[in-house]
Length: 230
Image (cartoon, rainbow, N blue to C red; front, top):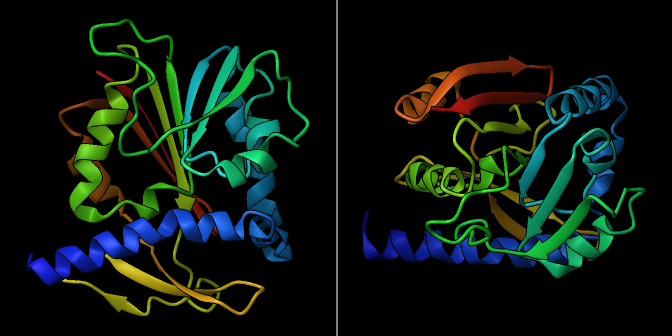
C-alpha cells in the first residue's frame, strides 16, 4: 500500500464521523423503504431474542433505530458512538434508561474495560457498522472488541447485503479491495463513504482462531452473523 493510498484511506475514514454527524437527523429515512419492511420486522424480533438476559456492549450505536427492540429483554445495554449528534437522537427513543446508557467512544479504540479487569459484558452488538471497517483493519478491530468482552461472550454483527438495483452502487475500489459509495444528503452535499460487503467465507477466515458456534443468516437486504468467543 503506497503512502498516497494510506493517506486516501485515512482521509475517507476520518470523514465518516463527520458524514454521519451531518446525516443524524435524516439517517433513519433509509429504513422507510417499503420493500425492506419484512426484513426489518424479522430483524427486530431476532435481535430481541439474541440479547435476552444479556449485558450488552454496542459499538456504533448511531441514532438507535434498533434499540427499542434489541434492548427489550436485555439486563443492561451500553451504547457507544463517536458522534454526540447521533446519540442525541438515540436518547429520544422509547427506552428503559434504568438499564440503557450511552457514552462517546471511538469504535477503533474501545476503552470501557481497563486491561486486567473483568468485563461486565457477556454480549456485543454492531449493526450496520462492519461494512465501514477497512478490510485491512478488520482483524484488529475484532480483536480489540473481543478484548472488551467476558470469556464466552456472544457477538452479533448485522449489516447490509449488496442488492443490485437497490443498493447505492460502488463508485470505486481501492488497492486493498475496499469499495466506496458516493452519497448525497438533503443539503445537496456529496460524500464518499467506504462500504464493504463481506462474505461468510471471509468472516470464517477472520474468526477461526477466536470464535465458535458461528451462525450466518442472509435475508433479502441484510445479513447477520453471531458467534461465541472461545
